[in-house]
Structures are given as structure tokens and as C-alpha cells.
Length: 595
Image (cartoon, rainbow, N blue to C red; front, side, top):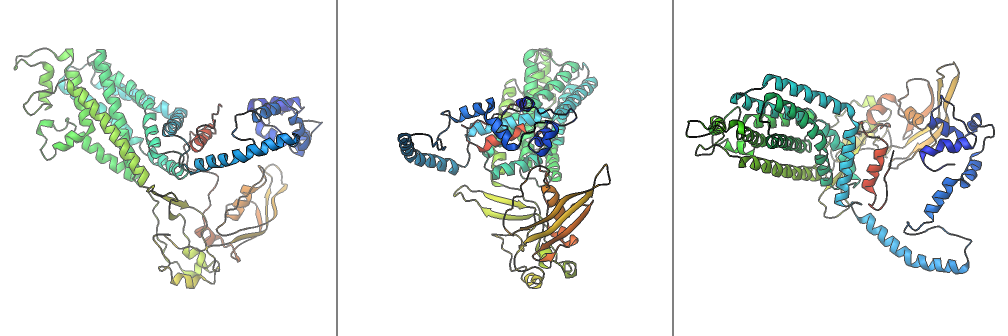
């Protein structure tokens, strides 16, 4: 009855005489127009068929028809019976030549693993991560306040210091705050991993598109954190105010922050839980703090540990920051000690020297930046490889053999069923070197018979296990329901409302069943009743599993029910569904959506 821009839907129906009540939501208003309740808004209410005819005479219909008649589509499948015989012959000839080409192109497109190029997939991932970050305004505000408070705190402690020891401690403490902040927010990487697994199974995009897109999307937050915290500390402490030294200081901290984030991304690619991730992060934090050159001077680190010093990213960043400050004009006064400058003596006293005792020069600032960039690239590659070829499985607890009296009604179902069955199957694509893992959270069952067959199946429990195909045995179940009725009391009156009335149906084992209907038809209510999720109201009728009546305790034990929720970022909106759709469709299809 209407297809067109959302902004024009209300004016369209207003012109037809339908007036939306002020207290009613737009969606509810539109939903009622096509029903008999539409007469509440228009005395000359039109039936759905009449509304459809009216829409065919509208401007929006003409606009859509004009687009359909344009040449932007590859092939016109419509059949126009009003054309002449010559036109029909020409069209038949065109179909003869066009359909094979169309089929060939379609076959080639469907056989392609990813519909988009690597660059476009990376760009889509970047847009997705950036949009999620941008919409999380609370997180951005909290980080702003946190960095501002930390900057004021550190700057106040070292306010306008001229002590070399204080400068060492200041730069060390600043980098420590960076690592602790990264460690605190690393748990979100595990949630992103679950979303990535779903996208990978659907062949939305290559793994490295995800890794690179996420890595680049960190830049806005890193820049904000670094400039707020770093600028406050830099000028409150009284470091050299030259533009070159300031931007080198900011740049080194930005590189180090990105590298440390990517190192946590490596851990998140194989860590099973948040506890494991935090434990690995604590070890990483310990090694970097201990061997960066502040706690233990570099020139006294034992030879068998010196490799850790040359590996630790914090050591390279910390050394670059020290050299940047101590080679500035503030520390260029020549002393009487071997004609060395104050900055060179400060570096020598801290142990930042070559084997011959000479202090590091300015060129080590560049070497530090190069090392951090190279290290970041390695971390990206390692993260991509781990995500591509390593998949973290959910831990499965082997079911112990329970007392058979607890499962007397559905027999074998409760004994051989378990939530979270993980099944492995090799991909149909040859030579891709990866496996797909399917997570099921549903009722798992098998034919054979219901309760009577339980004892014989349990005796062969261990023999039925096949590690190459299935981790746990299961029994199929046909679920049937008869005369399901559900009645509740109205919230404002004592009137009885019958939401379900004499509903019958069968869910066959091993087959997907789609329950469809208009909004408010009772789809979710029916599923909640079958899954024993309704605690209020009166439920009548019977539910059977392989002919046996549903027993609440056993059914809840052996079944899983996925409700209308999913593991997604809280900042995702309907607009981002178009972004997700873009990952699956070819690049030539325009899925741009403007809210």
C-alpha cells in the first residue's frame, strides 16, 4: 500500500484522509491503516486492495516504475503481453543470448568466496568500527575526563621540574598509564571476536580486512587520549617547548599506544576467557615495565636477559622519548666532564649508552619509530593468521550418566542431550585450509523412539562417539503440540484475553521450520509457551516429544531456547545493517543508507 521514503509516508496517508493521533506512535498508526481499525483514523476507510490501487496512481509509484524501466539492470525478466509479435520474437532472441551469459555471471559471482574486493572490505570494516566508536558517546566522554584528570594529576606531581630523575620518572609513568588504560579496555576484543566468527562463517570479508580495519579505527580514540593527556603533562612539567620536540613526543606515544593495542589483539585471538586475556596482559605489562630501562638500567641488565630489552616495544619508545628531551636545547650546555653536554650525561647516568659508553644520539628517535611501525605490522599479520586458522571453541563438559528415574518420561533424550553441541565439518571449498565450527543451542534429539529406547542407546554411549564427525551423540525428536491455548488477564480490566486459541503443529526433527506472521500475531508467544517460558496466565493443551508428554524439568535440561537477542555491540543501529549487507553483496550494488 506504500513504498517510498520514510519522511513522506505520513504526508501520503494524510492526503488520503488518515490522521494520526498525537498520542500514537507512527509505527502503530501505519500498522493499523491496513486493518479494519483504519476506520478510526478515516471515516472513508479504504480496504488494503483499494489502498494498493490508490498507490498505483501516486507519484511514488511512478518514480519506482521509472527506475525499474531504466537500463541500470542487467536483464529485464518482466513479460509484456501488449507488445507485438515482432517485439516478442526479438525479446525471445535476446533471452536466448542473455540468459546463458546471466547464468554464467551469476555462477561466477556465487562461486566467489568474497563479493567485495579486499580494499572495499577493509573500508567497510573501518566504517563499521568507526561508527560504533562514534556512537558510544558515554565511553568517549569518560575517556576524555579520565585523560584530563590523569594529565592534571601527573603534571601537578612533576610541575615545572628540572630534575633529571623526575623526567625519567615522568616519561615512565606516562607510558605506564597508556598500558594500563589499554589493558582495562581489552576485554571488548573478545566480544568483537564472537561477531567476527559469525561474519567469517558468512564469508562477509577476508580476515585481514577485519584486522586492518579495526587497527586503523583506533586512531581517533588514540589521538584524543594522547593529545589530551600528553599535552597537559608536557607543558605542566616544563619539557622543552619546541614544536619539533613536542610533535615527536606525541608521535612516539601514539605509535606505542597502537602497538600495545595490537599486542592485546593477538592475545584476544586465542584467549578463551577474559581471565586468560588479563593474565597474558599482566605478563606483557610486567616484562615491558621491568625491561624498559627505568627500573633496571640497560647497561646492567644481564646478557641472558638483554634480548628482552631489545624486544620490548616500551624500551624503544621510552629510549626515543628520553633522547628527544635530553638532546633538546635545554640540555645542550657543555660540562667540564669530557666536554659532554648535560643531556649526554643524563643519558649516560641512566645507562642509555653503547658498549663504548657513548650516549645514544638523535638518530635513535628515528630507529625507535621505525621499530614500532615494523612491530605493528608484524602484530597485524600475526593477529590475522591466528584469527584465520585458530578458532576458540566453547568448553564442553562431558555429561555424566544421571539417574534414569529423573528421565523416565522422555527417556534417552535427557541422557544424550547437552547444550552447546559443537560439530565440525570441513568446508566445501577445496584447498582453503580452514574449518567451520557450528555452535548449536537448541534441542538435540534422534529417532529411535523416545523413552523405550533409552536403555539400549546408553549402553553404546562410548561406541557411538566419533571425534572426526561429532563430539557427542544425540537423539532426534519430533516435537508436536495440540490445542495450545494461552489466556491472560488484561492489565487495566479483569477481562480475559485469549492470545492463543487451539494452535496445532509439528516441528520435525532435522528440518528448519519458519514461523511467520504479522506483528502481534502471537509467534513469540507460541514459542515461549512451548519452551515453558510463560509464568503468568493460563496455558492449556499438550506438547509431546516423540509421543511423550512434555515434562518441564527434563525438557529444560535437554533443550535450548534462543530468544530475540544476539551478541552485538550496544552501539549498533538499523543503519549499520546496510553496512553489514554491503559486506555480503557485490560492490556494484548500492547499499548506501542515509538516516
